[in-house]
Image (cartoon, rainbow, N blue to C red; front, side, top):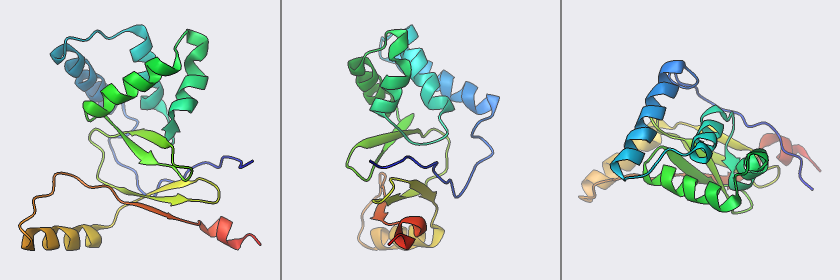
Length: 163
């Protein structure tokens, strides 16, 4: 069985973890709910707050395990994650085993992920030069980018060093 290892974040932003950031993302969530005729239930609020305070990419199962003591079921977590993705507040990363892991997205700089197939670590990286090349090629082809996602699977330094 694999032991979980803390993830490494290559970059940080001045917005993550501040009360202003938290307030802005909460307001965006409430506006999305209102616009779609949905209520901010206690269960949705707990799931949202869990994601907002997470210091790593979390799975549906992580959220469920942590919140089931509050009467929150797996289906509620699944539906809330789908709603948050539709609102473009949360994004998913494909973990090494193929499951999705989630992170808050609003107002964070674009980044990609390096995913270790050995230990499951997810490393956030930014590649400005790669972004420029990608934009230039797309422009040359007359292709307008709506969004993209880079997920690179391999083995981290620690796993590569293991015999």
